[in-house]
Length: 223
Image 1 (spheres, rainbow, N blue to C red):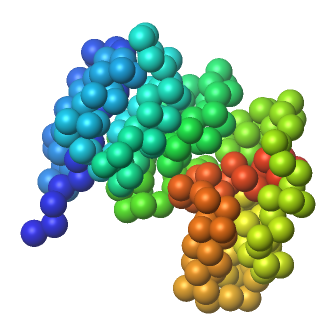
Image 2 (cartoon, one colour):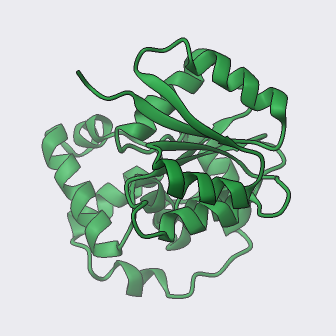
Image 3 (cartoon, one colour):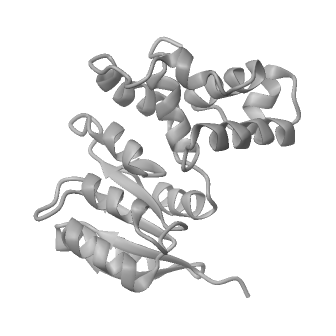
């Protein structure tokens, strides 16, 4: 029998955590591994419970969700842990920083139960959860004010032309199937190009590929 997905709930509001727990406890393939009310406790709980997914709020006392995400992503033994950021959308421009810190995606706080369950399963499967419309708005707001440490041309020099095309489409939020259709490739070939780009650019997962695509100018807000 497949092991259930272990989820760590991190939010400074007890009622929010309780609501999530009630929902997740009804699912046969998901179990709540623990709870934390701040970022520092989240890191400690992640080390103690080794969850598959951390459902992480951003604004918390002691240590915010971005710093907690970075520490989890860098911790030895937690390489397989995936962080799903909770955002209020209009106010959390720092979602961009969370993705850079190692988050695998984000979910709107007003998402319905079905969306939450889907997000957890997608993240646990090793994929990124990035709604194109939300991603472009949030990242676009921040990248308009930032400069990359390296020029786009320098950073992307390691990629083939095809890998650049694929990266640009990843940055627009397209799935492997959609990339394949756009470039007349099979989904498996598209997946291979995505994987190679991830390796060459040192990206932890697909979410960080999106960040790189925007930071290097390969994908833009008006794409």
